[in-house]
Image (cartoon, rainbow, N blue to C red; front, side, top):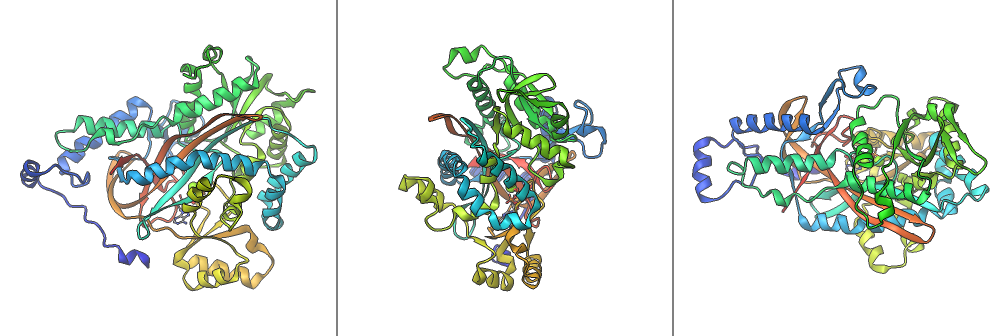
Amino acid sequence: SPFSVISPLKCAKVNKMQTQVEDSVKPIVDPHDIDPKLLQKLAYDALVWCSLRGLVVGDRNSERSGTVPGVDMVHAPVALLPMSFPEIHWKQACEVAPIFNELVDRVSQDGEFLQQSLSRTKKVDPFTSRLLEIHSKMLKINKIEEIRLGLHRSDYMLDEQTKLLLQIELNTISSSFSGLSPLVSELHRSLLQQYREDIALDANRIPKNNSVNQFAEALALAWNEYGDPRAVIMFVVQAEERNMYDQHWLSASLRERYPTLNDSSYNTHQVTTIRKTLGEIDALGELQQDGTLVVDGQAVAVIYFRAGYAPSDYHSESEWRARLLMEQSCAVKCPSISYHLAGTKKIQQELAKPNVLERFLENKDDIAKLRKCFAGLWSLDESDTVKDAIEKPELYVMKPQREGGGNNIYGEDVKKALLKLQKEGTGSDAAYILMQRIFPKISCSILMREGIPHKEQTISELGVYGSYLRNKNEVLINQQAGYLMRTKVSSSNEGGVAAGFAVLDSIYLV
Ligand code: ADP
Ligand code: MG
Ligand code: MG
């Protein structure tokens, strides 16, 4: 396995004597060479900080924690100290965020490209097929979305051997943890401040992270563009959601904070949010003559999806009816059906083909910057690649058109799955794409779960948020909007925090 070329780092325990001797010579730079007593104090203070400052999630062990706020909370799974990350790659990821935003918008406007690229997938993947069905209905009635809001997160891993920052995926729906991730940066900064005698790291090297307010600002500005002061922002949510506090942080920012854009009329508004499941929207929602969406008696200006990205969110026809109803309305959708489709893995793979970016972007520098972070991506009708993947499955990841973690195929299973698909020969290979497997550097980190610190060999994935808002031809917002670092045990394939594979982290620029 390619891991064998990487010598595992040691989680050295430095004893007190040694520390003192070294201290006088040079400061500790590896945050993980920590004395056990200090580790205990740090962990304790981190847990208190999380509790006081709302860096929390619903406790998996409790039934009610996914439905009733304020009961059975536990600190979010976090790394105890920030993960070092090269400044140059951090800057690179920030620089491409607005270009990816623009790309999503352009792709979303090309209905034929979306339908065409997903046409084979449509035949074998019922979920994508339902999304495409709604999309074609909108194309047929020539539905125009004048106000378009994108709250994205582009995820990357830094490939150790090539030193390339490679994109894992671009999320256009339900990009999670914009609410909690600024708190992780703050937690780490606070610990570095408090323990500056013991840990010689500069808190200022953790980049500012304001994703919660930047996302809230984009939502508020979209609401403002919609132009009905009595209308609300509706969060589409799952009935059970242990990550509800991440979402509530956004609602709180919309309600309590006056956004700081220069527009004074906008500063006077405080925006109300409501939370509804797809089922409730079907039961309580209606479209008025003019296209206004009214849910439970309230006009909806902006629909923010934190559900609806997975087949399991659609229990029956009722949920699909709700999705169609919302799409037909004139509310701002985050995302619209075409933004949603533009974020699928199949489209990611199509965009990586030669000359496809050129179809959507003019600026050659921009195109080069995006292409630089594309990993190898292939369709399963490329027989040479499939052959190679069967021979060396550990160098590939096989991905279906799914979101939310836990859906990909790795290692020997790639080989098995490919051989099975070849045998069947029914075209069901179109449900998947193949991707080059990225191997980030393995380093030691302290992961906090359920109150207990664990020293682990880990790898990390950097997500950079992007917010985008336009109204007709005017782009009102197009910016990088904070970040999310996720760190997971290196032996685990998947990286989802909510799915239980990874912890939230922040970055320390080196
Ligand atoms: P999802 O939309 O379900 O989050 P991802 O494409 O992000 O799907 O894959 C889930 C996880 O699988 C990632 O967070 C990452 O940890 C791992 N992963 C995905 N693609 C690769 C890859 N090419 N190389 C290594 N790991 C990957
Ligand atoms: Mg995703
Ligand atoms: Mg992902």
